[in-house]
Amino acid sequence: MPTLLAPPPSVPAAAPVRRPFPPSLPSRAPAQIDLPAVSFFGRTLAEYAQFFALDLPALRRRDVLDVAAGPSSFVAEACARGIDAVAVDPLYAGRVDELTARIDGDYARMLTQMRAKPALFRMKSFPSFDAAEADRRAAAQRFLADFSTHSLHGRYVAGALPRLPFFDDSFDLVLCAHLLFIYANRFDFDWHVAACRELARVSAGEVRIHPVCGPDGRPYPKLAALRRELRAGGIESEVVRVDYEFFIGSGSMLVLRKGAT
Ligand SMILES: C[S@@+](CC[C@H](N)C(=O)[O-])C[C@H]1O[C@@H](n2cnc3c(N)ncnc32)[C@H](O)[C@@H]1O
Image (cartoon, rainbow, N blue to C red; front, top):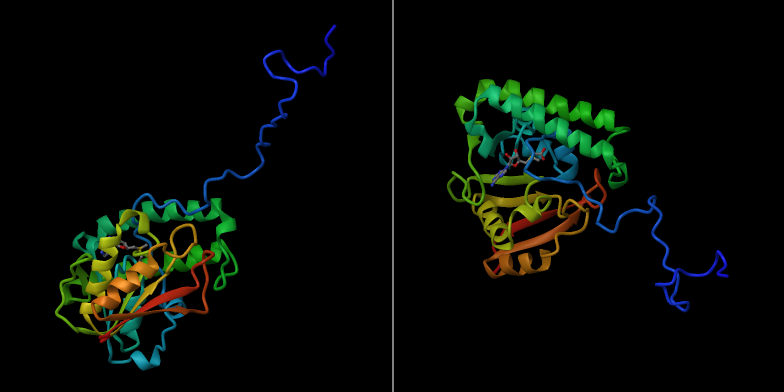
């Protein structure tokens, strides 16, 4: 008579017992922020100053371009400090009410993601998610007020990488945050090369790109190839650590300078 410990007839007696993973074990899929579309989500000048390591007093009366600026308040705040700042983003072709609706939807989605995946974050600049949310919502409000007043004066320009509506060497400093590598899966390698060349084309000085990682916090996998390609076209690059981290892996920027031979 079979005992209760005997294997079922279909399993050979010598076969190792395979236990199912307990449901509490994490899945093997890499943890990351899910970014199905590029979000219209923005940050303040204080946060820009940290992740781009900006010397704000030194930028007074200098021409600064914020590419993929979204609803960031960087340009509004920079202009208030005497910096000649301009923002460019494809969505600036829209009306204020359209941008407001876009902010409402994208902020809700992005903030839900953040709160659902706290293990991805190591916030140096904020004591809590609530504080980070309040800061980013304040950025969007300041942006909307400034956009209503100043889009007609050329402070907010509709345009998209990899082709920007500016002459060569128009700006002393060109910034681009939270587009290139964080959305690496939406843009292919050739697009990244073209986008970096375009950022460098409109800059007479430096380009700073932040962060240098993807949505999983790992460095952009084709970074070495991208830097080689840029160098071959006369653009030097350097990865610089910054005193900032919001999601894990976001503590650096890529700096580009023209002039290599
Ligand atoms: C996450 S927001 C970043 C906003 C801001 N730079 C910041 O860091 O707070 C990304 C922005 O990129 C813009 N964008 C999407 N495709 C773009 C493109 N091809 N060229 C320039 N901007 C683009 C979106 O409209 C959106 O406003």
